[in-house]
Each structure stands twice: as structure tokens, then as C-alpha cells.
Length: 152
Image (tube, rainbow, N blue to C red; front, side, top):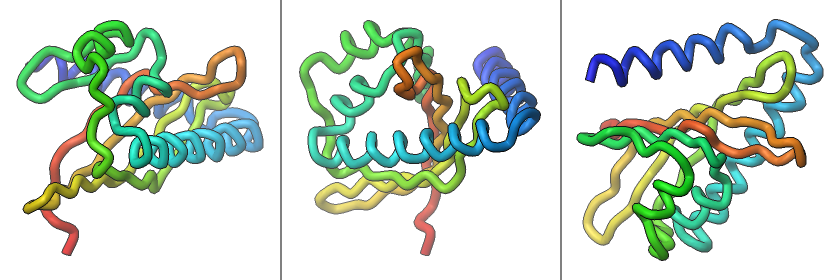
């Protein structure tokens, strides 16, 4: 468990160290693209299902931490885990912060999520680290989050 926390702390701090240390316009433009991509992924998840949306926007070398087990490593492993299950359409999220590196090739979003079931509503926070691909698309490389109490 200690390794998992240390790994993600180092990864996150490294990302933060590279943010906003160069041309403002490039990093700001990339941050806006990341924010839009995150919102587009949520819209697709509500229409087609969470699993389907995440796989469409996934980087091949993704890392997805999982509660109570080792992180999922790689898009193929995630595809094997989820199979053809499109996932829930009742999970939504809203990013409230996006930043990008000075190069405009790496960034992150932070946001709040909400899952509504027939009898309960769950809430939480999430983080997603994004990589820009050669074709200009953004793919998530690391995604995780936690549960929180109701915001009310």
C-alpha cells in the first residue's frame, strides 16, 4: 500500500512541477482543451456508458488505481476486465480545474463526480492525468478518485 501512495504522490508532484513554467498561452490553451475533453468524455458516458467512454478516451499505457486491489495497468487489461459491458449511464462528473505543462503535452483535471442508483446517490472527487497524442487528441493516462459525503 505504501508504494502505491508514494508512486502516485511522486507522479502528481512531477506533473505539478512542470505546470505553468513556460509560455502561458500554450499551457492555457492545452488546459482548455483538456477541460473540454473531460466534459466530452462525461457526456459520452451518460449516453453510451461509463466503461465505453473511458475506453474510447484511454491511453494505451493507462494506470487506473482500484480500491482493494492492484492498479490496472494498460488499456488492454482494462478492456479485458470490462469486456463488452458499456457500464453505468448514471455516473456524471464535472471538472473544476485543469492545468497543463508548459509544453502543452501533459495535464490534469480535478473534479466532482456523482453516481445515482435507484435508492442512493454517491459523491466523490476525482483526478485525471491527460497526455496529448500526435494526432492532437487527449487521452487519459491516470484516473482515480475517492468517495465523499454529500455536498449538502
